[in-house]
Length: 94
Image (tube, rainbow, N blue to C red):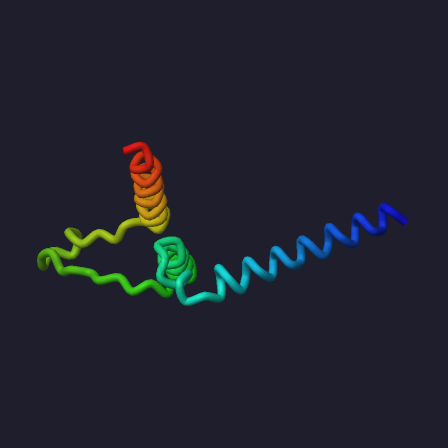
């Protein structure tokens, strides 16, 4: 009986934590203003090919305009976030 009681308690606690996390972090408008959410939306748009890119016409030569590969774009976003995270972590020590 004690194993069943422990399992029930653990399940209840896990469910409450999950629901609390959803309502207080994900569902709040405050989360939608964070850099994490904005980056997540940006990456989802790139993956789903819904991103709006602005192409500039560099010259009249058709070979002068080069579109970057998808992998390079994702790498740049990843590197930017890693740099921002490192800067944020190092700012704690100042």
